[in-house]
Image 1 (cartoon, rainbow, N blue to C red):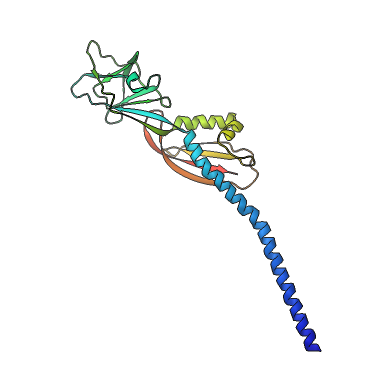
Image 2 (cartoon, one colour):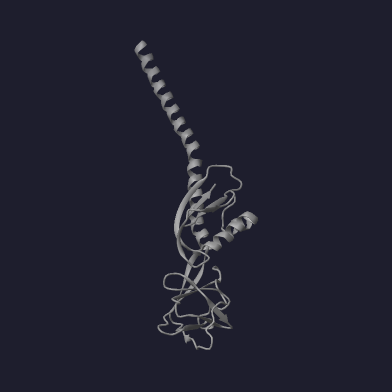
Amino acid sequence: MRGVLSKKGSHVGMILSFLIFVTFIAFLYSAIAPVTKMQKDKQVVLDFLKMALVENSSGDLTIVTVSLGNEKCGELNVDEIDVNNLNIIVKDSDGGILDFKKSGNNVKFSNEAFKVYFSKDIESLREGYFDSGSVKCKKIDPSLVKTETEVFESKIGDMLYMYENNYEVLKEGMNVPAGSDFGFEFVDTLGDSIKTEDKNIRTDIYAEEISFLYIDSEANILQGSMIIKVW
């Protein structure tokens, strides 16, 4: 009789142990599953923001390559390459910024010119200082032109201003879902940074850093990075 009771007792103990184990597993799952789902949801938002922030920081840069040889100066008709009303920078082969003069639809510059940059996201530097006198400048072949989409430092600054002054509109434009918020920090080629004052932080922050080339106000191509945060 004692042996039978002992066996029954051991069976009950095993069943109770199994039930406790199953209950513990169920508890762990109920505790971990929401966290795992949140991590996946935030990662999706983070992945989308990486593309959206770069896209919103990008614009067109048109570059005309110039070869003047022994000519004293060159002349480029901006209507022929559809860059009228854009800002202009003229550079020599070493990247130095040169004088130029825009008169009507024509841009004139010295024979040191190597590349002419056009974009609304750069600054027009040293405009109006070049004078060709009575010399007739060589017409530049408009076929030596390329337009590329680049990340601009000025547009990152514009996006930071928008974040600080109209966050909800920017958030909606970035398609950030309700219940999520974001911020970012831009680090330039010198290691200097500008960053958002993060808003509405209520939970863990998920962050990722991306590196890219960007164009500064003087049309220099530089290496930078951005830390993107979601919570």
